[in-house]
Image 1 (spheres, one colour):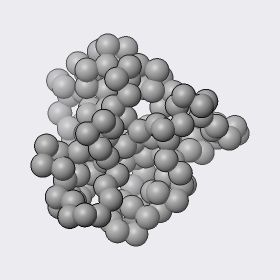
Image 2: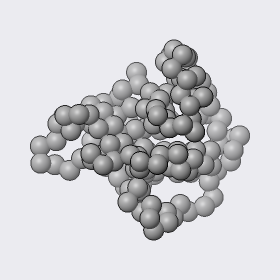
Image 3: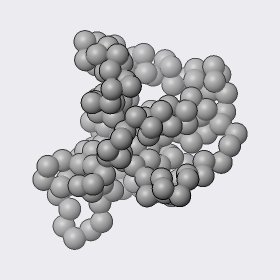
Length: 155
C-alpha cells in the first residue's frame, strides 16, 4: 500500500504543509543518493512547492509518533496537502510520482512511473533502497541550506 495514512482536516492544530508549500518530503539524510536526489528535485522545483526534512530529524520523529506505521518505512515519506487542507502520507513510488509530477527535469522518469504498475515500481524501489548505501555510500556532510533556501527545510 502506498498511501500509508491520512490526517483529518486540521482543526486549529498546525499542519506540516501549507498552500504555499503543499508537500513535505522526508528522506534518509544519511544516504548519499537520497541527498543528491533531493538536491536535484529542489533545483528542478522552481515554484518551491516542496519542503524537505530528514527522517532522522525531530519533525519526522514527531510524525512517526503520531503515525507509527511510518516509523520503519524504508522509503521516502511524502506529506501531501489535499484541497480540503487535510494531509495524505505517501511512500515508495507513489511518493516519487507525486514529487516529480510536472518537473521537466524528471519527465522521462515520470513517464516510466506512469506506465509501470505500482506493484512493480514498489518492488524496484524496495530492492534499490536495500542496495543504495552499498552502491553510493553514506552521506558524510552536514546539510546546511543556503540562506534563501532555509524556509524549504524543516528540522
